[in-house]
Image (cartoon, rainbow, N blue to C red; front, side, top):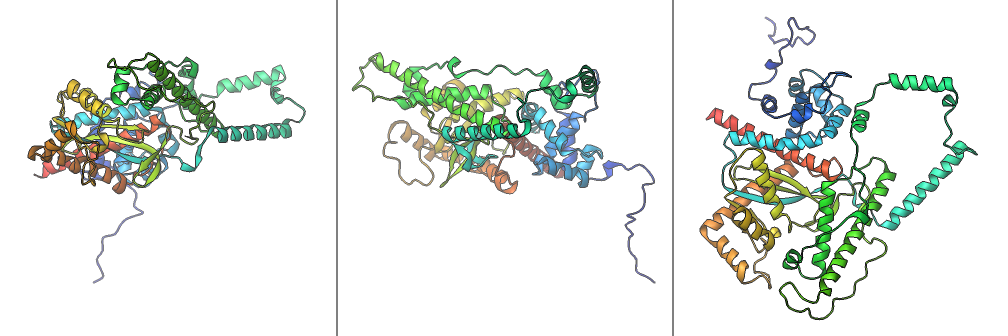
Length: 517
């Protein structure tokens, strides 16, 4: 009797149409993502397409969203890698229904709908709330540094930028001289110099359909850029002097206002190096304009002769002359990224922030290019409350916990007074055995007493059990140590995709555990 084996039948054709529902178990993450996308509000995606159905057919947005969310949930971020998985991975074939998306199609979809993708964070949070994973408790806030898609070696000063622009201009002139010779270079092409040639050219242009990017650019009208001379800065001595007396406080406030404007009207990062050089030079001019505005406001404040509390100033302020040429540096690959300290080294990247509850569900995910966490407590608490409201969750955190880097008395007072949320903030760093020399008495001793109590110690300990494991899993297990996209808007969308897919996988694990209980 011969050996008995199960034959693979690799060359046997399907006798009946295949049913993809048989390819994956019912509790697979792919089915969960498909069901989750079905519960999300995708009106913003569908609104970007023509309602009359004219033009080339586009892929169904719900399918594209499901593929992107599943890819990020399984640590696949590159559009080319997603295309490879669509060809060879069964789970991707189940999600796409055996469609294979080109990597360019995936990348363009993400670029076209980056804001809508970022706003899906609230829909995922709503699903977590329905499952009972968003409960009132201690919310931990922390940040970590992630490298940008840029190199530290291309942080240029204005002089370096100017020299490179001049070099490119000379190279362009030499290339045009070689190409056009004695001609100006702006003459009409040969086929457009006759009426017959022009009629043929325009007839072909009318018959050629517009691409997706061309339609988007034709429909959208960009607002005119605001010049540095048109920008106005508003300074509130009550707030500035309370936070940081002296000239540095006014300069910091001017820089904060400029950064807020850049968030409200972000600059797209051009692909052309020449255009990025011009954008980098513009950024340095804006920084210098903010510095001059802060100095002028400070000098006007000192000229009044009295402090905020009515006392007279002491000696005159030190004379300060703003430089005629910007003295800072800017990265010409990603001008929004900054050199941020990370331990003993510096990272060219972003300071990403997350607010996490006791169930390790991310309630808010934002980014900043600020080098420290000093000014992030208030914005992160506000972002957390806004996300809960958008998700229809009418509850606020029981308390907020953060490490010593977030110690900002102004923000702490605002959170307690306006949001009525207690703040637990360590005045001393974890490795510091004794308090700082100037951080004694008053609020510092009171906070140390609170954190040393049994209840305070129990609440503050939750920070290490929630937000820090989140960053460890994201950076080391998922390999997210560097962003793939450039610019604050694109990086923010990428970070929120990471955090919302973290919530999705947590929700999936919770449902599996509940079903097996």
